[in-house]
Image 1 (cartoon, rainbow, N blue to C red):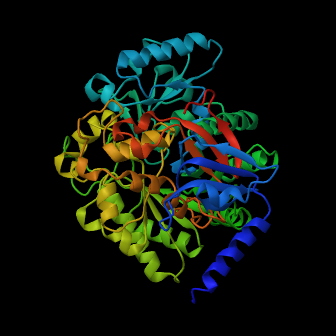
Image 2: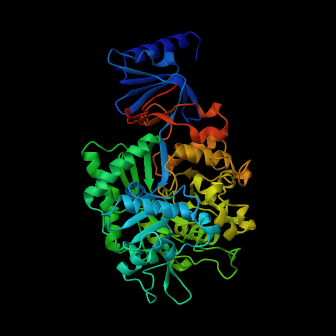
Image 3: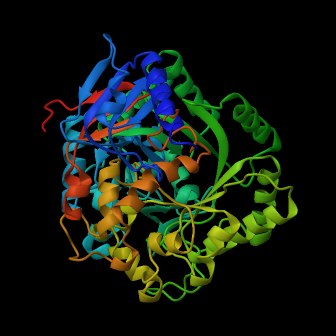
Length: 561
């Protein structure tokens, strides 16, 4: 290009910008981390409608400010793409907001006190429900019993789920109301833990056993669920979350999000995976396929299915290649044989679904990778992006297979917080512990790693998740230097897992996940700049504004610079 033509092109570009319609909203005067590799930093951004139309310097957006343009001065704050929670159980978490919260109860007596206080405050509640108890904090990691609850509440049924959702703790009244006795067997994979005389102890492992009691709990009404989703969306807005990927769901749940969208109340973009069982019928898969064709976003989107390959390490239900360290007689059992998972995944793959599979134990991870590899080899080629959820343990030989097969590693940073892994580490043992929650190993091996909360398993806050990913410490800074520090991520890597890579996990990276012209204006603005803070303070930072589709949906009550 000749030097004489360059000024002409610049003049034409300036004229085009001047002729463009004014922006509806301009953000300026801050630090904007775009997650766009070509231009990672900016100081201003312009929005028209629900779309970003310009990103650059303050002067770059000046021509787009018209008489009706709203200008939001960032005052040096940090703006990021809206957080995408890539693994969540949103309706379940929203319903739990009105129940007993045990996440931060650090002793059996503290848990009992919360049950007592809740029962006293809700005398008319037919069931006492809650969740969040952590195995480590019940008398050194022993399993709780019905007797621990009977001393607190004996006249009404009580069911408390563990933080991971894979174990339930119930009182004697709950067992009585549900008709569970020494002869009762699980309704699917799971275990009814028993006392020496064969009577149920009050602990139910995995869904097949938990359903023995949970099926007796009155189902929330449709309006109960809608109200819960409204409360849940308010929490998500406060946390800067603009999109979620539901890791379990049903057509009935999707209808609730559609109803909120039609009412103009939906402030959270939802991609849902429908839960699939061994016996899910072909007719039900046809119904899910119809949803996939009809619900294509950007607010409500279907297209994925969810399988459960194993359980969790804390209750010895995760499927391991070698025996558990604390009990060599156990290595966990997968929910499918290799033949069964091969056949199920092959069928789902042929139907065009994206497949999300829960696999925590290293044996379960290997079996799922084998099934994905076989399906890709035997079925016609297509964009797949199948995922494995959690991957808390993995054999070294399987780490490079994620990148080689194009399998997405969906991992939840706060699961590795040292304040909840005591029983995990004891059961898994030192050899597997060295590869525990190996986000960095998988990234270094070329895998696409995406992050979420698994709410209500742990806190909804992506900032707490970022803190865990970058430090491998809990919020109090223990252990100093982090647990298995070589697995720590850089701040840029951790943010990528909550934004652009997470959007990739739902085939949406061209629509959201970075702040670029043409993408949806889903943005979170933080009170402080994460990049200028000590890593130990990331979890303390609060959200100042949350924007979804260019609309401010959350403002901090008392914004501070």
